[in-house]
Image (cartoon, rainbow, N blue to C red; front, side, top):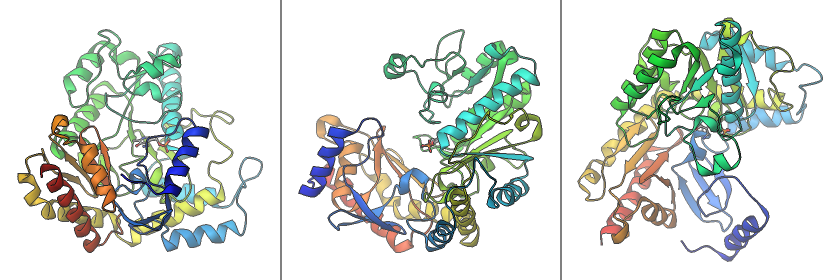
Length: 422
Ligand code: PMP
């Protein structure tokens, strides 16, 4: 990728003065509208990532912007020292809509996942009588629930996490007896773990549908299996809907794909709950779990501020009014239709869509320079943002994307794929 002088300077400055964060694509985006972005040099891109599903409603949706500007001119931070009028009204609406007794607010998805784990631990202790220091929160391998000290432990062990001294046997995706990973897609691993340890498992946290190399059917059947195990042993099931909620998969929540009887004990939401315009995250659950939390035991200066709630109210309205679950389903169908010919491509292993979340696993051949990374780079230079990761072209589009934009994006992917075989 050839960067402009301006973009290269910014990249150098960032490298010199910052640490942490993620590994974004090399460009610097300056402006967005709907499914499009413009970089600092004015070059236009089609956005097939949409902030990893924080922007399901598209960049700068006019209704979300208007709601926020209106609130911004009134007050932006009323929260910890006085009440704000928006929060109780919003809380009631959310509880009634999603049929839970209580809601609690945080700022980021990581914090909400962290709060869900805290609630689960306390519930295990107070309601189930498990000694607090023995409570286990389980996840499966290859998951992401955030990088805070609490939830990082739910991910696969890594030398970095060990070096931070953050490995925890209490929040884990490792079977405490065998020290082996509870592998995603392998229900037998969780079955074996629960057979031995169920009496001290406080809860299991899972993202029900994910962007993986697995098929939709495999994902649904695995998530359903985990849910059924939770029911069998009477263990709370925590659904992490931070990324795949908010209509992304063609239904409001990804757990909705598991069957009408499925109801998580705790629901964790974030990202597109505010359309990516402002950070806000929430945990929903019934009294039996939620009421364990007392004052000064969770919260944040920036949780449920009027700005956050204005964004969330507007973002939710847009999801409903623009029928975005249905649009996500249509975009998925259309994507599969448009890419039918690509299934014959020698380096395409599969083509997957779960609503507006897409994935193309690549048969990588690093010696032949055929890698998802190189294909992603070619797409970027042709004006299409997608994210190569784990040998896949990872994509998730906004539901305001037009058919024409989807077609244009697929044309670029086809061109890039053809270039790597030339
Ligand atoms: N859970 C899931 C499933 C996520 O995808 C993410 C973010 N990618 C998080 C939690 C953490 O959210 P945040 O980055 O807002 O802390």
